[in-house]
Image 1 (cartoon, one colour):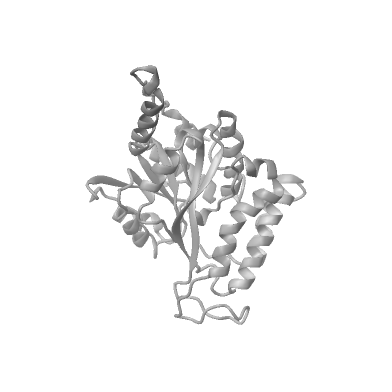
Image 2 (spheres, rainbow, N blue to C red):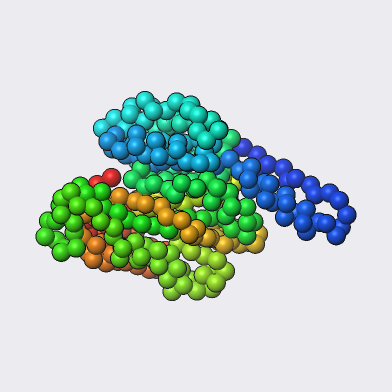
Length: 328
């Protein structure tokens, strides 16, 4: 699509030649890589739909990051609640950590988070970003997120990274009786079981399904983990698959690993820093049920859609909608 063409439009940055005697090539190369990593311009893309009540707080948290991101892009899809209008009100250049942080708002003509994130990545690249971090509107990345992105992507064997997931109730849910572990209205809690499972499945899913790829560095990450990558690599695999109504994030992990390992850069890495996500989607159902739902959806996607092809993405989406409603 036009958005992916825009992601690919900017030419790759020229390699910095190393100089000096032969015995100093290794250290010079390491120094060049370190300097290149620190110079990475990291854009943040926030896919948002009907997030008018939350988007200002999300933007405030992102603009407070130190170091500051190069640009923050809110990618809306014509939300009827006026998300774009609220975001534009906050979209101004602000002084953040000694660097200018621009906030931009774009609209995706096609519905779906994959299309929104592709459009957002194209806008970040047009603004001069070298790397992109995808942050859902109900997720807060760790304070040192930009520095962590630079450190991980400074390792030339890594093509994609993500943070540790932590699911926290914001106290808005009510125990509907569906699960005894669901919090009462106004009560905050951390979903430790669900968070632990979301962390562990980044490892056991590829280990069980693609053991050879696992030992070559494949991990499966999900949207609540604030995935990040170089924009050159993102463009090379065509961005997110816009035909997928969900699991576009895990599919990207597989495609990135497959593409980049041909160049010796196929490792995916989870950073030991926490990205905190609201449990608003799960509060009415409880932790035990939602952990089981996540396991079933992940299994259905990998076995039914990715491997055997006996389930279409639309069927997977209907299964997801049946198991719990989308409240984003």
